[in-house]
Amino acid sequence: MPNDTLLETRPVPGTDKTTAVAVRTHALSKEFGGRLVLHSLDFRVEPGELVAVVGKSGCGKSTLLRLICGLEKPSSGWVEVGGERLSGLSRHARLMFQDAALLPWKSVKANVVLAAPRNGRRDRAAEDALEHVGLRDRAHEWPSILSGGQRQRVALARALASDADLLLFDEPLGALDALTRLEMQALIERLWLERRFSAILVTHDVEEAVALADRILLMDGGRVTFETVVALERPRDRASAEFTSLKEAILERILGRRS
Amino acid sequence: MATESLSYRSRLINLAGPWLVPLGLLIAWQIFSGSGLIPRRILPSPLEVMQAGFHLTLTGEMPMHLWESFQRAIVGLMIGGSIGFVFGLLNGLVGPANVLFDSSLQMLRNIPHLAMIPLVILWFGIGEPAKLFLIEIGVFFPMYVNTIHGIRSTDPKLIEMGRIYGLSPWQLLITVVLPSALPSVLVGLRYALGIMWVTLIVAETIACTNGIGYMTMNAREFLQTDIVLVGILLYALLGKLADTITRALEAWLLRWNPAYR
Image (cartoon, rainbow over all chains, first blue to last red; front, top):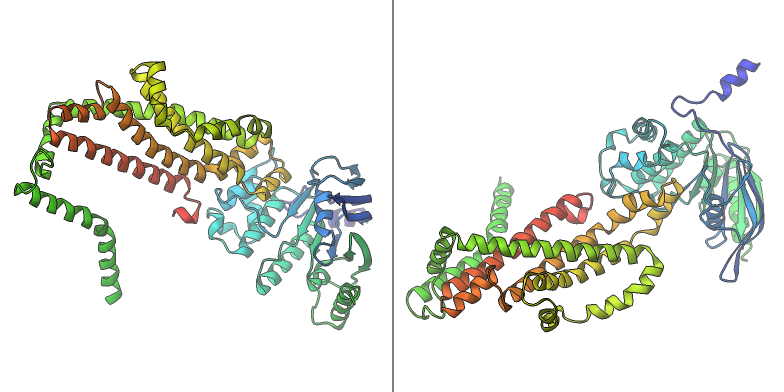
């Protein structure tokens, strides 16, 4: 039995430092110019869990990610990442935006090297990460000649190279076409299964949330209004009855509040 | 086959096109001046100007003046440009410094720097420092304004990304802010070069004992129109040369940017 556990937690080669962390928020509130964007939010992510946050634009989901990342300071309440109360930027979390935010004056590889831990073999880490997202052969190109999907994959490789324990996705696939989006969703799922980092995926695409998440939270007006566990087996069949009915149920909840 | 010859022809047109108009003007000039339609004292023919140029080169007079002018231009550009760059950097990065200096600098910027000539002569006399000072003020502002603009227009997303990946403020400056400001800084450099030549010409024609400006003004005294024209052409060539070098510099430094490829 002890052997089994050992085998199970054995890290994937080259990814040995991923130690998924838990996230907790305690009565987290955020105010911008007198407008309350988050209302005393209690939110948790277990280590290695992939949680999706869906909701209409302006519901506070992006703000939540920025608070967990430490880019914004809470107006009240606090964030705990890996058991530590956050002050300043989190050293565990990596945020991915809709824009890949690559440095255009650095090659693809140099962009990834930038994120690799200072003490390790940075070149090697970057190459491994690019291999993981299938872009090893583009390592020496300028980001400007890559497609939007490829740029997002580089951004993903950058997060992997940094040995992120917590990945925060802020609608990273929002600007991609439908096919590339499917590809990227599969890639994110595969990497997550391999590495088991904790992840929060903010999206307005309910299907994406149902396809990827262990748990889905619905946010509206700065509050969590609905929460559901997605108990479907992976890889998920988007055409299955359970998948569709869950998707419909969540969509109805999102739209239902308005009518 | 047809497209191949077409592309060859269009390439030829692109290559030769820009030279056609100057060449035509040159030929017309040679015809009018050579035939005596325009008096030599007003406009000597191109061949005569070329002869004068050769002669001045052989005697070593022109290379000497050229070298003096070049030195003046470079030293002035380096000093004035660096100060402009440093102030742009400081005010672009440090809010309080910007509050303190920017409005004063903007006020000074509106004074045409050549209007300072009487004052500069009173302060420095007519020696070398006066000329350098004028060039320095001239190139300061384009460098300052463009550096500050470049730094301000850094994409905040890139800075956030850098912070998330744990870059120190110094690393952020080197890897994110400065490269992002570079295109704008180079635009500033090109403006500065233009102003540098104008200032040099004016400074050297006031009171000077060497440099192309002196050579030209001296030739005017003796009605040597051909040498005056040599001087003017030299300025044109130097200006073009400086522009070509900065373009090459841009193409190399900004090779990551599709707009510069």
